[in-house]
Amino acid sequence: MFSQSLIFLILLLGIGVIAKNQSLIIAVFVLIVLKAAGLDSKAFSFLQSKGINWGVTIITIAVLAPIASGEIGFRDLGGAFKSPYAWVALISGVAVALLAKGGIVLLAEDPHITTALVLGTILAVSLFKGVAVGPLIGAGIAYMAMKIFELFK
Image (cartoon, rainbow, N blue to C red):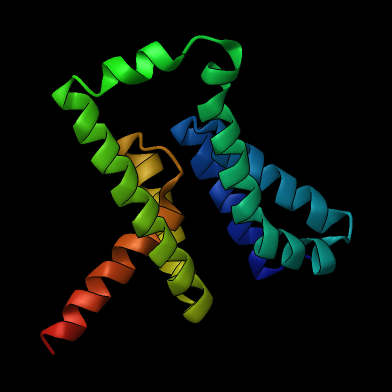
């Protein structure tokens, strides 16, 4: 009755509750419901293949919402380039996007690495009050580190 994957999900749900991480709780709960409803065989592969793109789209919508609402306009954009912090943020945004690109490559080429990335994200969320956006960026950082390691091999 209780498969290894269901026990693992229940453990993750417990960690989410203890860590008070709403995103982890909702994610695990949705997966348990899909599994209990018998929709796991098709739904999980669909979510696995499309979920990252959906997540990136939702995050992009959230980031662009202040522009759409009028909170941020061209005057703010021009003013931002006068600040050294804005330049740091701009360069960081470029770096993170490039890291995420490498992360997608790594996850596609080496999907078993996802287990370690998810574990690292869960540890950071539960022990250090981190935010669960880590798997894609974590994969990008891992991809970059692996490429650097290969250079010195």
